[in-house]
Length: 553
Image 1 (cartoon, helix red, strand yellow):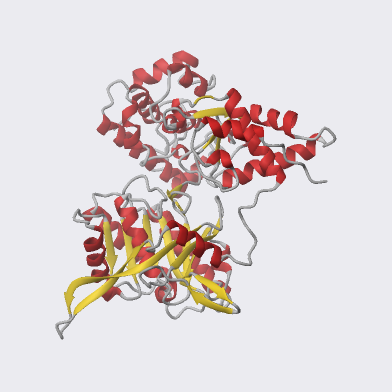
Image 2 (tube, helix red, strand yellow):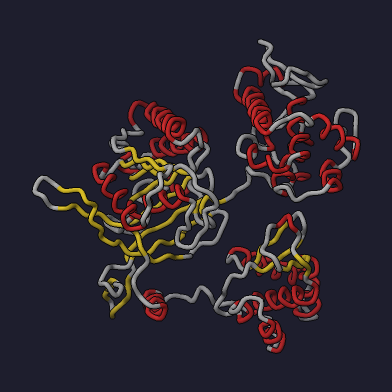
């Protein structure tokens, strides 16, 4: 779109642009003038693709603010940087003027042009021309200490809230016949609809490709059963590959073929939208003939999965089998390098030394999904489900109607569900039990929120009426009111930080490091009476009427 060059722009030996500072300025100016188009470009380019670090920083701030910003905010974000010979308000005025005539369609063109220049810098021959130049830029994801407070779309985020991370490998594993495949296809259909999965939010519908390496012939029946049971009539961005091929064969060439297949489906059937997830069902069937124990082989397979992640910019969910010890079958190199692992198993209880399957009121075995590894979140959380049989409407050659299964909640009352939970966890440590330090921290937080809380700023996009409190106020309250006088400052700080991290991992509180504020998410904790009824005054009063906890020696 733009042929204008600015001082500092770079080109490769063939004359192709490696940078386009004018395009970066135009795009930022357009976003400042028309914040509503931020949503159109945030998926096309990220801060790391901007050659001008200041423009990249400003872009990430505009994306995070999502339209809720003021001119003074922009001046602060620029931080006195020189933009085409201008600083502060002059720089803002220059950017706005530069983007004056940019339409929403032209903004997407500019975003793509910035991305193309970045790809030339990072991956093509042009990158060699940057050696020794003032315009050098890291190609290994350098994060400076000065950038520690920045929040970018590249940071770890979740496709499915607190469960499935974006653009990462995920393993769903379990014994044979536990329902892994039904569960993951159900997950994929939830992602395709932007529909909650076990109460975990999915913010928008995303295309999903389900690679049926096992039981591809039953894929149509599953889709019919799902649509029939849940009343889905709309067309969903979901596709099942019923004749996939071995990803291990031909030295990884089949991985590239799978990527091209998925790109073709997304381009022709889903309007060019990138997939949210690719499901490989199952790992063993997808890598038939490959050694499960050879480290070099497993490493190459893992790299193939990562290549799918990078090329398609999506999560890859791998369905795997467990061995007799409950671990993923074969070499542990795969699971050691995957950030998220979920297990699927039958829910059981102990009768003496015998394990007995727990069933719901319809005599269906209850199964359980558990988060056993989550690099950037909470582990140990479980979700119960059953497989419900549905007639698909397909008849076999003998005239019998075929059936399939859908994932549904167990049919039992809350009291029965709690009883089953207690039965299945009997003899294990109570994971919810809080220590005195954690109780002290929460009391300090709750008291600070009650006394010094203020309305949540619009940038946080919290529900109306939500309160936040500065982290420094919570810390001071903890030290002055809930810490013994003979406890050293370092020890008190260490204990506070551990307690703070615990409540973040549990989803009870959230902290915004840019604004240095903390707030209650509204989440429930069985031992914190304050959380049992949201925003009720009597909970505040009850919290402060109870005796303060004692610290252990």
